[in-house]
Length: 256
Image 1 (tube, rainbow, N blue to C red):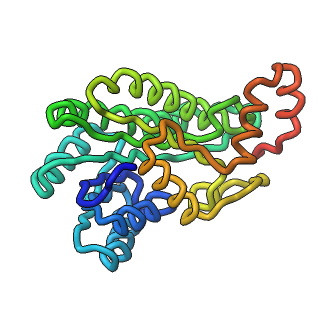
Image 2 (spheres, one colour):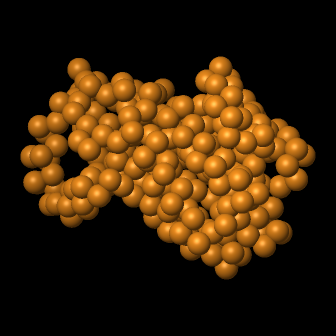
């Protein structure tokens, strides 16, 4: 088991949902927290809630799609705490396109957030982790990475890219005692999923999701995926022949 006490934990997308609940969970473990998000108002609400658990919490406004912003904030965090031990790269956005329509502008924002918002932190933190003899990256992907679901192709593609990137880094960085953990949730009741107009099976509350993620991090799991029925369903969909998947997916109601 990994002892998290006194670890400096950076969390992106900490203003709401899973990020906010993870901040509370890490605080209970005695961690020092650096909370990042674009929305400063909600981020400050998170800081207030977490400060009821620990005094070691600071919030930083940061756009994960802006490398300059990331560099500045990381410098501030390291100046304040001395180092970063764990980077939880949780920031993400979704986009449901109209049936048969591709929105390149929306695609760019999703890709920048869901992929580059992870890649940038690897670029900026890896050398520091190596010099200190180790560290942990936790990247949040999704069980939606298995196939291209109609109406969500941009989102699915971004999460598939995130999963593959994290997998490659897990292997590359293992010799340096750097752990890379991929988190693949199913549907979690967050502001992002509230926009969905389709049925979301096995919808989970963010508190439970955060508990599962924290437990997996402490155990040093390579992949943390949940809930089990959705995990099993995604594995089945992944091996489904294209003709059968097309038949299944064509019945999904997309936004029109």
